[in-house]
Image (cartoon, rainbow, N blue to C red; front, side):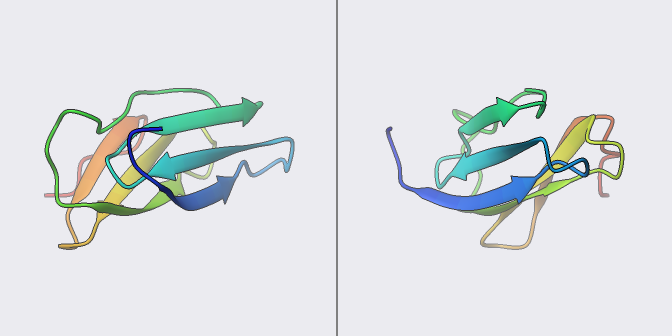
Length: 77
């Protein structure tokens, strides 16, 4: 790991989960799909990952309150 893990989010089915690192790296387990990561995008340090209702996307939330959208998660303007 290049940065510590700062968040975990379960899939809606409970059959998988995502881990997110402070640098935006995303790690998937079980039925959690990988839809991309914020690593290398230089956001403020990431503090959480929030899944969409269908688990086909997620948002990374940084410490400044900005969101990075992946998969079917709509961008937050």
